[in-house]
Length: 389
Ligand SMILES: Cc1ncc(COP(=O)(O)O)c(C=O)c1O
Image 1 (cartoon, rainbow, N blue to C red):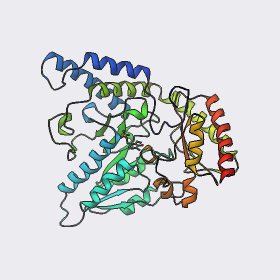
Image 2: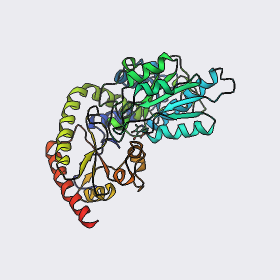
Image 3: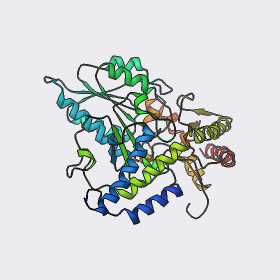
Image 4: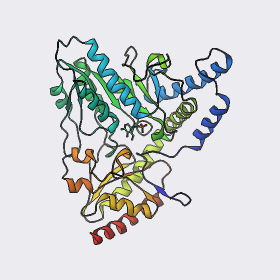
């Protein structure tokens, strides 16, 4: 589709780089090529860029700059915290031969599912909380799942496919009361809805630059002061022993700028994008046999997940792509596989219904004209797919 204009409704997969962010990335490449660990002036200049970005990331999540650890993105961040905190917390506990226990949900992103599977292979026991058909998680269920040997709870703030926001403040309070660490994957939430680690009462949060119009391949975890996850990467002393390796300076600088701009426009963009999403959803629901997946009340502003009965999502996606419209049938990393998304199956949807799911995720640059055009195109493509089936 390159070379002609596309309508991009896949912001949960990734977002276009903001021009202001690109300018900062380029300036960092030119002006901050030093090694931030070097003691001389060139190194100190590079260090200043990293620390400025650290402040912006910390401000976006309401934490202290020294609690922010830069990573290569959301996936590394989730791995560092889920595996690293579970392991270090288990080692610090007197479990007397009992298996350490971690609580999560069946709706998590593969970046959390993967490290949980590794922990399971190491002998950890994993409980996945029950979810309602709309994908809601009840804090009472968490209370019942916690045990003496529970070392970590990991739950997303916003679901990547449904956009649903979880009651993390209430969930984290349940864990805290029992002395259990709480990690929250805020990759889909940060820059779209307010995220404040103090108000959430969590111990660690993951964010990723490319979901908020920053560059790809850079992200961060906020980890509460005093917590030291087992590192993923052995090597130098960077990032206060939490993440070895010379920093991705241009990426980090761009990430900081993207956080600053996202924070500035948070309320305004949120309200506008939600209005566009609601308009799109209303028009899509007017198509016969359409249904919205997940709870509609509390979501990130841009996301709606809709199924059209009798029209497999992958076929509608291809039809829309041919018209220059980008949407998704699932998490970016599982696109291309015909199996329905584990999130939709996790809601208890039958296989056929789950296969019909399409995720539309809007961003701040989308317009009402695009919404209306996409709604018309979906109607046409769904009718075509149904007629061919
Ligand atoms: C909820 C969630 N967590 C983690 C990730 C992984 O982030 P990254 O693409 O930066 O590795 C994603 C990306 O889709 C996500 O949606």
